[in-house]
Figure 1 (cartoon, rainbow, N blue to C red):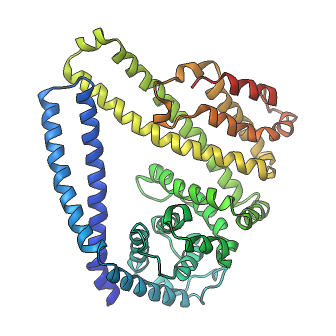
Figure 2 (figure 1 turned 90 degrees about the vertical axis):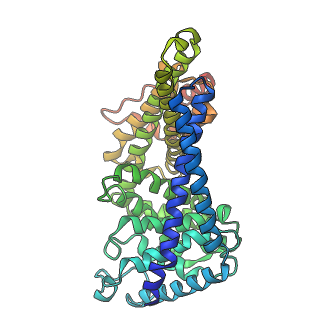
Length: 425
């Protein structure tokens, strides 16, 4: 009964608050983009009407957001009581599967399967919200929530909804010490035995599982979810006990989950980099059009405004894709350097060779000078950094070079160093 009341009351308000915040951010982006178009020479009556309309919407949504913040976020004691209730509900749920023990029973109990999904979903939503409020969790014990998340995050048998499992990663992401601002969260990740034994394993499993969510937006959703997972994995890599667990998983799951993880990581790296570089070429084309001021001014105002809107839209896409590409290439670099064996499996060597040659061709090949833009840092386009990371895979080259059908014409350290010196940013 209490859970249902919270679902219809507090959690409905939190859902509305989240929706308003997302809408506000979207309209603020649109307003900023339209103002940028106006500042760059656009000034049609329609554009001015759009700016006025967006300003009114932003003002209304800002007021709504402040009202929700005053009602929900200011009452810390109420949020603490709600968290205490959800902690008890989590303990009750875990007791249905035999307590905080791993691995989980292979067969999901009927009692656990009958739990309404919103019981768990609401708990995660509240944790995400409170984790982003300064000091809201300062005196709250999070161990039981952490154990629950680790136990069920990697299990499709117990929690079939991939978005609920992804929400668990979002909670952990908020708890990373550099983000939470709480010293207690470091001990959660670095001293909790269940965390040390299973967190990396289940994160890698979810990274693979999230490829297919069943949603019509699954292709784009996976990048956001994997971004959260990658941030956690990067943090855990710097914790010696978690790095040792990672090595052990790579050995045990060399031809299972870990191989799938590497395949998806390579796929994402190539796709994101390719999309980003293609969009950079299109941005350069519009930049060139604007540089030719005589021809640019001859165009109808509406056409100029449309081109500028496209320009700012692509800027946002490139910035997002490049951030993820940098992240993925960085993860490939440190994992291949420290755990090379999976990259040298017969089913992987050709893919790895193709990937290395692809990165070399795109970042330091003949077309590299065509990728120069006015402000590469604005797009998080860092070719020198990428080329410093890719050579971390260089130690694989002697192994790859002798394999039948593997062509690595540029795979030697001297060539890599020469390329790094010649990159134009």
